[in-house]
Image 1: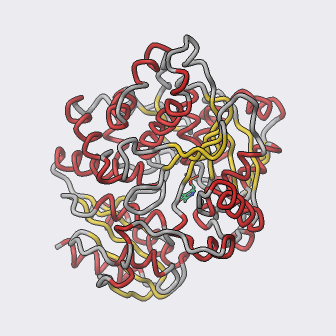
Image 2: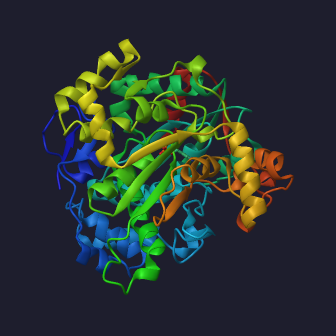
Length: 476
Ligand SMILES: *Cc1c(COP(=O)(O)O)cnc(C)c1O
């Protein structure tokens, strides 16, 4: 499989080339030249596979520059009961007949980003060793992404992580998760400033191209195709579980299911779009936002309007607080019949200048053929959904999952199972859970007391020069 850019550059690239890269040279995102189609016989064969073997089958359709035996081993090392807590890796929890939660957050950092990031850690280590190269991952975080990256890269050969976070502004639990890591290749930097200061420092260092090249600076952000590909697997795994009662019937693989997806940067649900393009029988992809409803607005109106910082709300589902959706361009490219010139027109420099775009009527009409519907949720909705789920089913859900469930319930179709993706565990967002239910959420045994562990981090002024000095010191 070769990869092309969403902005028209057709120069074919291999999977391992784009693995270690960010944007395509023309500023677009990478996508496979086509989506391999999966027929009913293949679905029937995959139905009984373990999660790791299913991952191998799906990944090998998109990766031909890693020998099959190596890729299989990487999948089997990644998706283990030891790391993800259960043999199913992403088990379903039944809430009502035909309504399920799919657990994606039983990995080391209790959020769905582990599903992809853990694989990325193994892929990076493998590919860097093969090339005899090193990579210094530089990132800024206000929570989930940074910790998922650190837990994926800890102890990996050839990789160092420099993660900036705003000093004193993360929850004690998040701070403990990150700063208690003692691995020599993980560098936590607490910046005297806010999240935007951290991001500005990362940008300043990345814009110094000579420094970037000399020190092999890279990122692990959500536009990485390998992360998206890893996420495709759990849509298949969820589908097989939700339809398993029908395994014996002739139409077992024509039963459709819907997924409700708590969304921010459009990474998670874009993987659902890819699974659907491959032929997985998905009826609807229900996109749920919080008060930051950029994407809900698009799917209702055809207008994509990037929000200014002042218009971006801090909510109780903070991992969905976005002003623009960094993976959205991938879907629009497919929606426009893979017209790279038109995609470049919409997402190139004009996007920043105009603050967004409105699709033409015919372009927007095409959305209906891709199965997307949407809705948004508020703080009050989250509280009510968390409380009702706790009282009705005895299941505690986190704030992001609550957004997904609330919107998912508005889009149920009789006879079609609805799978709500559980993107984090409630233990990460205890304050809102207590507000909704009066109860403290359960903390997984492995994480009880982490707030008391010794912490390893350095404090820095919001100063890119100091950051470069630190990187230079560590790397020489
Ligand atoms: C990142 C994240 C999301 C949003 O996922 P996207 O891929 O950005 O759409 C939702 N919930 C949680 C808990 C997350 O960490």
